[in-house]
Length: 78
Image (tube, rainbow, N blue to C red):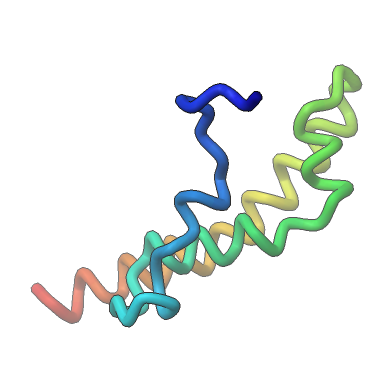
């Protein structure tokens, strides 16, 4: 019997366009995390420092457009 307090990421995926919410940075981040390739997921948890660094650099490159969009949206609003 599963623990009733177990959090599953799929439980939190009811955000973004699926529920009619605007295309917020949080929903964009959730979309990005759901699309992460398996090798990045594995290498982020690796004990091998070079694999972990490669995965971190790749994740950083994927996050930069989201950060830039958010900064641009903040300047437009202000």
